[in-house]
Length: 239
Image (cartoon, rainbow, N blue to C red; front, side, top):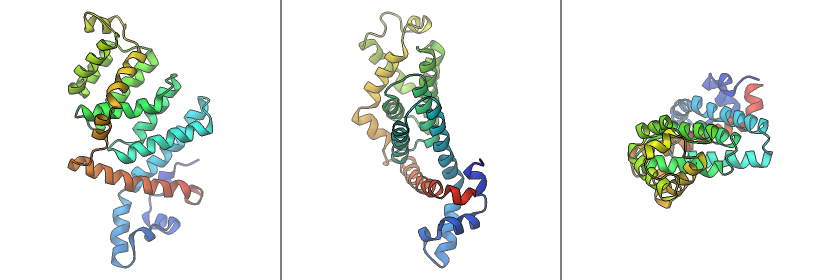
């Protein structure tokens, strides 16, 4: 079945089908509003598609509809409250879940919290999430994965290393422990949650005190609203 975004290339047709004009008023405001909303449609339609793909992937992995809905809602809420992309959050959740990580929802949010607290952005989050996904698949974190983290959030890796040491994940040389694959994925994830789920870290992820954060947060809310409209009217749009 065709993806939603392939069916909404014409803003006029879409506005007529889903009643976008209601959102932007009448008269001259309508034209300006539709033009503004048009810029959000590609990302919003991709988000709607991403949720469909996520549900299909999770169903294939054997998760129940109830669990899938809770996971999707968790990702949507976190995306709406932060600058993080819904596609990235859903993908991270799906990979972690398929590799047997039980608390994959909290871990995805903890990764976001750690990334933000360390001064990262939505772009560096992609690298942080990739490292977590690779660790989940391997069952451990190796030196190459760690270097990816250092490149993405250099300010956060020292704190994460200290947390791993305090938890007893390694003793002696950290580099040697990484080279020998002695630090398990479970240990890494426990340290990430310890740091990334603190109030300070979560507040950093949801901060709107910076211009970047405020703009991203507002864009996420608008994008999600359009995405919900597209999802609710999917049969009409693609029919």
